[in-house]
Amino acid sequence: MRKAVSLPISIKLAPNVPEISRIAQAVVTEGADAITAINTMPAMLIDAIAAKPVLSNHTGGLSGPALKPIALRCVYELAQAVSVPIIGTGGVWSGRDAAEMLMAGATLVGVGSAVVRNGPSIFNRISGELSQFMSENGYAQLADLRGKALP
Image (cartoon, rainbow, N blue to C red):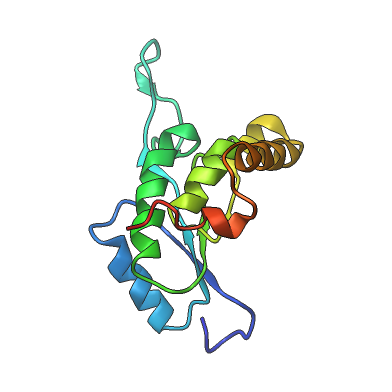
């Protein structure tokens, strides 16, 4: 990809791999400018009344709040393994979720499922909640949060 484009490249990594850090190191070596962590987890729902999968494809990707602990672990591991920016995604629905993602080592925070559920106004709500969290907990700027939970 790096040979084909001069634009910044962020590679979105899947969480269901044995060593996400090794994959991140490899894509950075190949020219990735950033890492987006994480993609959805493979999942499935079954309609017990119909006795068949809910999705026509049978399986799909789990996203939303259930994904946040997995996303935090991945961001935490990646922040210790690579020096490029990390966009932390997965289960961010509140300002506190965003703060946790930053504390795990994310440079930026991505929001997906919360937008689908709540519409674009979710960005203002999350931003306001994050500002309030920072104010209440003595953080003057985002840089004070970044990597706070890292060893």
